[in-house]
Length: 297
View 1 (spheres, rainbow, N blue to C red):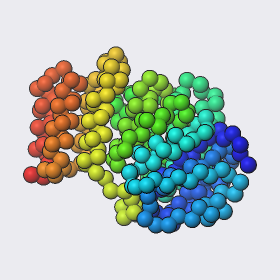
View 2: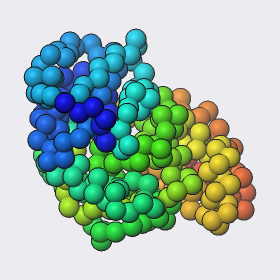
View 3: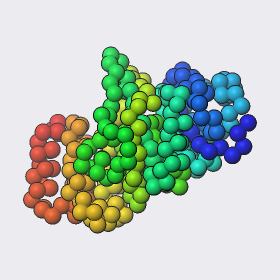
View 4: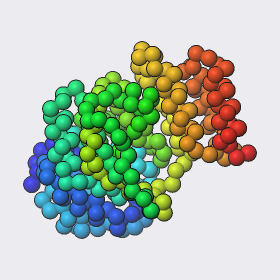
């Protein structure tokens, strides 16, 4: 029995109970053994057998917490982080799986590289009719801001292991879309060094039928929060990276199409981003282009 877990594994659950078994089996098969599992039930409509989970994870500490109402994965992860006891924390979705060496290899990096705030591995992205490897990068240390804002490269939430003092529960917001971007950007604002392992150690299932539906409303709310963050603004201003953040937001917006009901939040985001640009004309042209090409009026 683990008394003082080195790693806390937070798993938000909302329905998809049948898929959780494979996730738990992948945890049971980890070559690294010093961890606890926190199952945060986001008011699932399907019954979850805690005893069945304990039967899979024999002699592994399990904490089960059920939220009174469905509040989204961000809130579930926040609650899980508050309850976590480990020096390191991972957030694994209930339908994703780890290769047996995931924890062993990511913990080894955090133990060795003291300047690194988070380590992430490559993933196999599985869709209904295809599977692809996400990232083609060299192994080593990267600056988070350069990676996400300049190179537009990102990782899967379940493929990362964080230092517990870096990943704060308050940085997980109750959004249902882009909540992972919000958490990661806020968490890494002061210590942006991260480490990449090119080996595929996590399998992410993108099931078009069972997956959580994307929400333009929630994405826009997430981007508004980031654009209004004084800490993020001051940090990127110091780094002369305001334009990189602005381009990042435009890039995320360009990935979707919008309905007229999204216009008010879209306009609020535009207003909050004006301070990020040295040219009012440039940002206005960018948003007018998005209105023309991405809105169904």
